[in-house]
Length: 391
Ligand SMILES: [Fe+2]
Image (cartoon, rainbow, N blue to C red; front, side, top):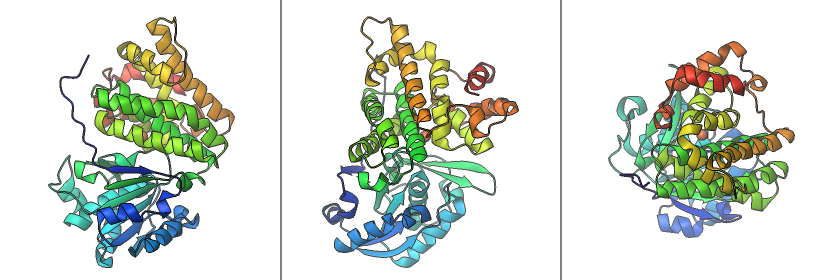
């Protein structure tokens, strides 16, 4: 059945090529500005990736006006302000961000203050508060998972009030997303597995959520196919350029899918678990993914049955219900392979969550914004047994 209404807006140009992050002249010529400020973090810097990109920018005739590296594991409110101040003072005309989700989100939010001025919380809280495009933002992801290079949201941690603030706005969509497998080759196996499972969760939740459309479905299923093909190889053999490239493309496709269709109960549980027990986002998603699919099973049986074949399952002759169960089994098979590589925990008990903390996760999940898009109405009592099963 077709949705009554949907909207698809995806102005971010995506380029993919092995080595393209250090050879951006044709793309930068199109954007047309000559002064960029780099936002990254110390880990990426110490891997030599910032210098590589900066050298490429110099060769492209672009001036790097400054570099900001103090992005913490979470994108933090005060860092956004510092970063924006430095960008402004440097005389830059645009931003190049090089990193994972926190770096990209910090750069997105800093671009609001750089382009428009004001105070992030006082002036830009709520959805769609911007009225015109921001300054050019080129994003070079160094993980394959968040999809932040193609999403219209920045999530920033307010350390004073201990809460995550979301800034959803179509003008936060970057100008250019640069997918270069060379930029993810040094990602360690645990990060590769966790971020890849985040991408898979984006794709599966986008496919089954209430706001899904035929266009977001196409991106979601394409991402799922690529992840099942490439994630284990990328985790086992980080130097495999084909697998790294496949995961980068998958992550971007999943990002496009979920920025239109949103995520659901799995992300709700992961957000709560991250906030309460500091479990990394991708790991929490990986743990909850099969259980969230089970929680939603009655509402999404047909969709799961269709997804199974994108996961490489042969569903010929199976009933719809059995085909749907094979999709959940395929997800468990994938996480078991990553677990066997010692790259991914698959139980809450293995990531420092106390057994008496499960009710708090259920409560936190109910209050999380992602729960509004879940195909099954969220109920704390009904959700809790699935969280216990994940323990
Ligand atoms: Fe996510």
